[in-house]
Image 1 (spheres, rainbow, N blue to C red):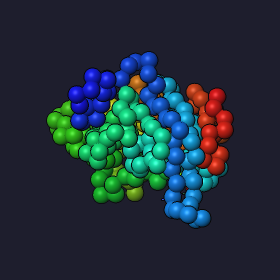
Image 2 (cartoon, rainbow, N blue to C red):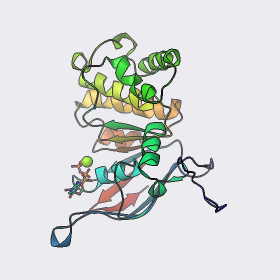
Image 3 (cartoon, protein in one colour):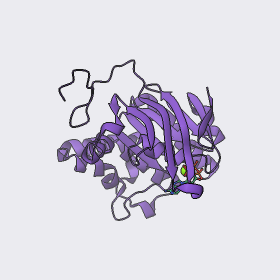
Length: 244
Ligand SMILES: Nc1ncnc2c1ncn2[C@@H]1O[C@H](COP(=O)(O)OP(=O)(O)OP(=O)(O)O)[C@@H](O)[C@H]1O
Ligand SMILES: [Mg+2]
């Protein structure tokens, strides 16, 4: 850490410039398996996600969307290339740096919601704040605010099984926003929802990107979400074919 051009610290925090993109991916490669059986999930992917935008990632099943989101979110390691998120080069982080990055600066939303069944909606939203040992009063206030943001103020005490799919996904979005992440990553967030509920969830995502000052990278097959995005990228066989 003696190099004055070093941009990351031991904890993975960095000075990101406001004009830098939230995400900068360069020549990313990821393969699974080896030899003749190797699957080249990503074959040299490069793109930027500008700050404050909702960027949608489309592509057929198997095109590499989940692989790409997992790498950007620090859940998996690339074989080659670089990923900078909010000024931090993810490849330079060790396990604890990645853990901090995921805990403090990235919010995840998955197709299957991923809520903890024995916890109420409010408790689920509060989990990331507990992990950060946020003061209980502050935590309660933030949870209440987030639940009203996603339209579930009246459902705070219900457990996931007592909520509809759309409501569960809204709880998951509130949870993903709890720590005021810089980047929201969502992998087919409407994949398990019917069209009408899916649209409501997508409109919520669109609204929170504006109101919570967050940037979002969302994999989706959903034409309606694609229509709400600031830009759409397409992955085909591990390559970006269409960035607009
Ligand atoms: N852990 C893994 N081990 C082996 N192969 C994998 C692994 N993860 C992904 N793959 C392969 O990499 C390719 C890309 O998969 P990925 O899950 O990224 O696609 P996707 O675009 O998210 O598809 P879907 O729309 O079905 O979710 C596929 O051929 C898949 O089989
Ligand atoms: Mg996928």
